Image 1: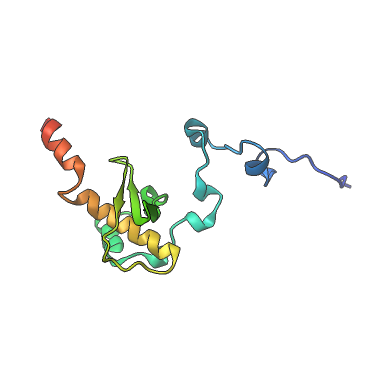
Image 2: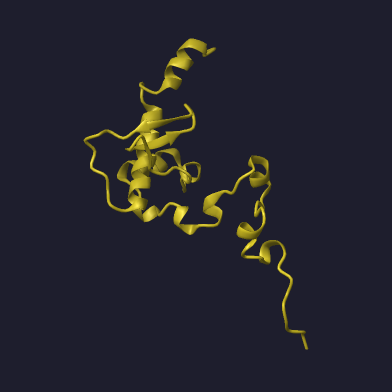
Length: 137
């Protein structure tokens, strides 16, 4: 018969590892020195039932089954205004002032993802100027 008692909590079995220790488990987390939030909090994973029509069309056009490159994009705030962070320009992109925001965070995050994709595809994105100035082809 197996002995009952306190098991030593080590490795992946220790649910408190992210609180008690460094908790940085994956190789990628070790490389960047921080947690990848959606690995631990299911609320950070996009709810695909809330996709905007634009994102549905975009995924279909691209032939993608998920938005894994947009999973960590969320609606944030800069100087009290709703905004989304664009890693390509390392800065916040403000949401238009007249835009009505949905009540739920998941819906706001989907809107943020849509606006980020649209901004990155627009002629107003700073990468367009960089491509004109430094593009080789």
